[in-house]
Length: 234
Length: 290
Ligand SMILES: Nc1ncnc2c1ncn2[C@@H]1O[C@H](COP(=O)(O)OP(=O)(O)OP(=O)(O)O)[C@@H](O)[C@H]1O
Ligand SMILES: [Mg+2]
Image (tube, helix red, strand yellow):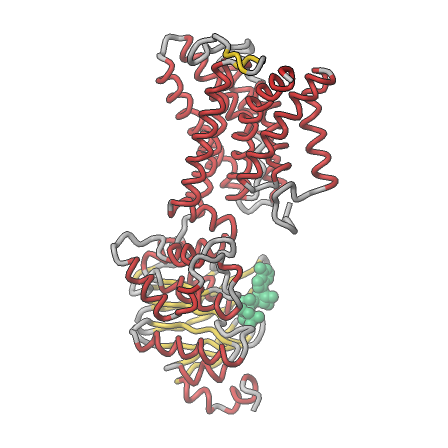
């Protein structure tokens, strides 16, 4: 088990955003988390990265209790996040954004990984010296994914990577995600685009108003009548 | 003409100090959105420590190093014990904390030292240099030279080192910086240490010209603030240009009008900028929170 969440709760002031969440992600899996607007998906990912306090429950990463660990230590352990809304460093160059993704690394392969990212996303190579803020939405999403990969994560958290993108780009982003999974990165994918996410996922969880209401194999959830009605518009 | 040149020399000398102070404001503003009103006290501590250690017999280079170290320590402690614990308070509260800290540091300076003015010998003599009918004190050249070197070093730090870029990244997007593994607490401490160092350096090079006492930081801090506001808060180059403008403007005003106007210029600039161009000369549009 790479990630284990037990009975997690989190609040914004007095408002409870997450209640008694338990889930797990195994090494090499692609696990999807789907849910409507405001269900608490982003809050959960923020808890996992350590930028949102828990009010209950525990987190384990590869057997280590990370419940109270500082965000930078979690990155060092191998948890990276592609945050909602991309959050690239707009005034910094594309290349600086990528290098900051490798901020905690001290090894000599950072340059090789940079080349690998440029091979994966050739458009980033073309624009490497431009401020990240000048990229289009789709390009910024690619940058955000590449930047997170630069830390060589063992677990990559993706928060709605397809949000606000044109259909063609959505397909491209999902192709990239499928490719990552082929490379052995463990993925935890949050999506409102439930169909695409569940079709790709080994397993999935359905989040409703802060609680996990269903969990099953991706294909089983896709075929489930309640999921179809609520999230797939069928 | 010679008169104008004379005013320019004096304006550029004080302007360089305001620029360093303004940069101190900018660096802390960027890392925490806090306006640190204890910036002037860093200038005072740098000057006072150097002057008193030197007077007590410590060789000048050693006294300078010790003063820089002491001032940086004060800066780090201010961040660690006054700013960081209030991290989640709103910005106005934290600004009030810095005002309290500045009063505290002035009080501490009175206790550690005294209320007297302290002098420091010019670094390389007092023989004025004649230039185009005006005279330039050698210490002014120290002020320019040191300021240029410090500003260049800062530019290098923020544009060429990974940690400098990480500090910039934190100012642009704190959440994303945390997700990259950038320790934002360390960024805050380093920004206070750097700003304290900038203040100390300014205080050290200017003391042979102006003398210093426990209150010397009040005016210098306010002028540094007006430099930072004029340049656009958080904009490094803006703070430098702003500092030079404030320095030259007050030298011209006190030369051609009356020296009574000297200190008023900085306030007029602050008010003018706040009313008519809240983003300053080079600030980004739609400036946030405060
Ligand atoms: N900073 C905040 N302060 C107060 N409440 C918040 C804050 N952020 C989120 N919430 C609330 O917490 C709940 C969960 O929000 P969250 O952003 O985690 O949902 P989400 O599933 O990611 O939604 P979306 O699909 O719109 O991104 C919502 O009711 C939201 O209004
Ligand atoms: Mg969300």
